Length: 351
Image 1 (cartoon, rainbow, N blue to C red):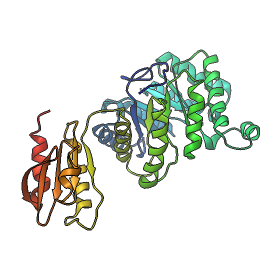
Image 2 (cartoon, one colour; image 1 turned 60 degrees about the vertical axis):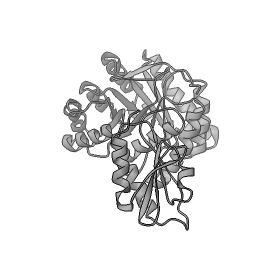
Image 3 (cartoon, one colour; image 1 turned 45 degrees about the vertical axis):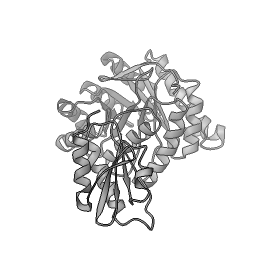
């Protein structure tokens, strides 16, 4: 797939932009000041496949906590700063691998310059973030409200300001909770911005609605070759953000690895708890490092045929089920043994 070419930026040990793989991000929802809780959550996110993690830094105590958190994690840490430029400076001094600011709410040009100077001194990238909800009054008046054009103009104004301050180690993000406006804004900025784009649908909602809105929005944007790092924003456990992001990238052919689970919809022929079984299989395969497709089928009538595109699968019957490989029935097993049989086959799998 064609990728829009951008400048390459180094965030800790992760390269974004250029021809590098799209990096998955999330954000902790612990209090950053609580080093233990924040570290534990980051380690869970690492295990799920998070490439870059962001922490809110609303206090000086939170900025200072970054130093201890960094000692126990293995992925780059981004600090999220609003309003107080001193927090951005402290975050950089305490080891942040990147900072996220909206120069529009940091204050005077002198304060933004102080942050830029510190970032330049430490070689830390700045993510310039603009949300549709924070659009400046003159742009709202110019465009008659919140528009894709206004979001892009706001972001590029801030990019140009930092460039004028002598720094171009930048990542840009423009977000909106309006999915199609967000898509349009990314199409516009991709033609004008040489920096990597951090893509996401902001305030997308709960795990259910947020997954749908993020999948639609990110799917369109990424399929057009736009975007270098992504976050799926959900009101829920951040681990769910990673799971969704990985599946979006895999579905688009932008990431390989990990078992893909496919399952049929339930129907009147289903004689087993297919919904429960499919969910159990999805959880069970999460820690198995294979790049294959696993099918979970509800009946023995169509199961083998429908599962023939999968590498391995199971199909339920009445009190028993089938183990299937490439559409061929391998053996029958008791219903209660379906899950354990499948797991053992996967653990013994030879690529």
